[in-house]
View 1 (cartoon, rainbow, N blue to C red):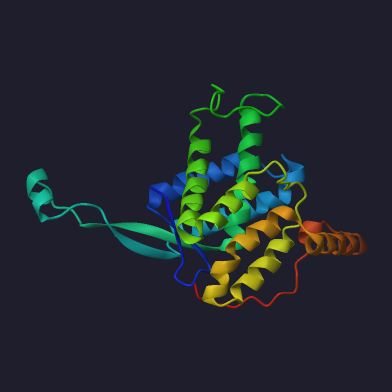
View 2 (cartoon, rainbow, N blue to C red):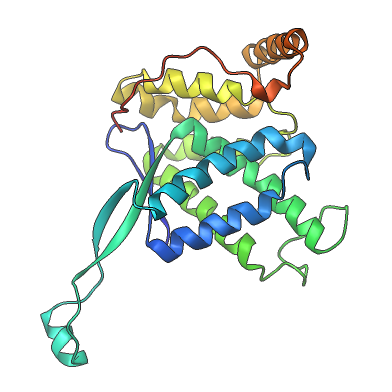
Length: 251
């Protein structure tokens, strides 16, 4: 099963799972975000989800870290079951910065909604707990599990008050990710990396607030990006901020 833990230096989350867990999550994420251009107003958010898929894929290819996790087998159980088996399972591991995983978790709410509407062939919002066409949909279940694990990790990491505020903001009606200028996430990621361990912990909830509220700084950046895209005659998603990210992150 997928599980999520805060990293030692509060830089982000470590996402763990065995090969099948990662394969199922990879396929589910690709399924719910749809094909390129299918949900055109959410293309920038879709690319951020696919960036997570990229990490998952590389973990499945053996290009990321692994952890050995106790599986409950011991010498006594080996004798009882008449089997020779390892005491640990190999779990794959990827890391994601807190601002990034917070945005992806928020965006997946919209993609699950869009996917469910498509499956039910309806353009209207629906109750995913009662709609018979999607209530047991496997892709939705895997995506919701990831979101639940991120939420549980947040609950263990920040204060009770901060957690309540984050859940209210991240799942509120005011959340709007259509045509989101995701370069803003790069800026937040960059700032978060350059904080010390204690400051990161205090700013996790602040990052969620800024992502959701899209305040003046976001609006100014968005305006600059659209002006630059018009000047260069390119899509705004093709633009990148000039940020010097470190080669290694102290997770």
